[in-house]
Image (tube, rainbow, N blue to C red):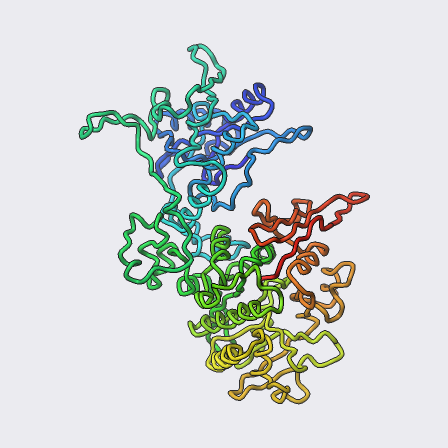
Length: 634
């Protein structure tokens, strides 16, 4: 069963499922809920689940709900219950379920419609037989709960809207509903379900009967004659002199196109709040709006997201820093981004993650995945280059890498410190406390030196894939110099880090220390390669159990570099059980799933497919079944 957390099912749901189970081999039960006001006079804990007599109390509650409540018939669906047959398992739907934001509209209608359209199971509307109670409530708990503030996967206490309607989540859900499967506006309500479960008509009957609807949803007033009140009870329109059974909102897929680029200030300010859900530019999307009182506007911008996501930490000098974890990728690395995000979620470290999209396709992908993402508009300069054609080391590749440090510089100038990480890095622990310990005036950064016996400060041995940049004047000046140096070369951005911070020949390396000192006094500290290893040092990736080997040397992170190309990186992740995203199902992979998922790259970039298969003795073995010519985007 899947059920919304604010729904209470009374015991009559068991009788309903027994009846349906006796009648059909593969089935799904759903129902409209009963809405009750906030001053609902009963406590479910006290009246139903506190000792003897609970059945009598439940009967009292059921009677009260059905005589004083309103059957919610506009389309909201709050639970689905179904049976599982291990001998002949049958899915609910033929379509892959998109990554909806649950509780924000359309996902329930989409799922109900696709169950009906797939025809794999008999779906039954039990609205008249099941008492599903919903008591009106506020959404203050979304902001106030410790879970929202700290839990894995939630992008900060205000990124997820506290209002159920005017929100970016609803916009995304409508977009997903209209672009996946066969859903059309206002389908997928309980009234569209072809079979209805109800009390039998005989007055003395104390059992349930099934009825097949020949024309489902032809009458939205269908429930009105059998319940005390419903949302779609017929009303006489004096103006039109006709009876109506409620009204429904119309959504057009063309109104829910994901636009990565913000409108101008004038167009943004002219949009009305009434149309905010459909334009992609709500009136409250101005960067001056308060993130604590308004949902994040569309499209997401860096300026909007920073104050919402930033993690406040002591700066070691009596003040505090506002820190974001920043990544920047193109669409070619979409699945690797999600695997990285899933890993952070499993560690409870995703709450301050900010994604800079280096092309429009990545923005659209990340937005529909529910990530706090903005489009790096400097990408417009290289928009003519196809990211899928940017092979590793190509001139195109180098142009895109230079956008990373430019993104960091913008965040620093906005007053936010940056924990920069590439998405091909595995995190094992939270690195921020250790990085903060280096103090102000420092730039802790990873070394790319593969030989553990040599200093990490060798010429051009900076790895710009992992570092912590404080939002102070010295660091800003250094990044201005780095971006200017990178813009004047035909190389990627990484050599510019070393040439600026340590000197082209290493002349700024401090004697006897793993650091360089720049002209303004900024100390670039090369991180310990046992705790922050690159992809070659200590031979960690060659170990039979990479995670255990990392734990032995005390890794905080492990970089999957010193290997060419995206496909090889992904293969290495997969072979070492470090891939955490199921691209086919748009889901994170958790240990309790018990199986490594297939990796499927989406999009027309000619990327191959990696699948899983069972080996001898049940051990999971991975093999590449197809590899087409493809090029890494970044």
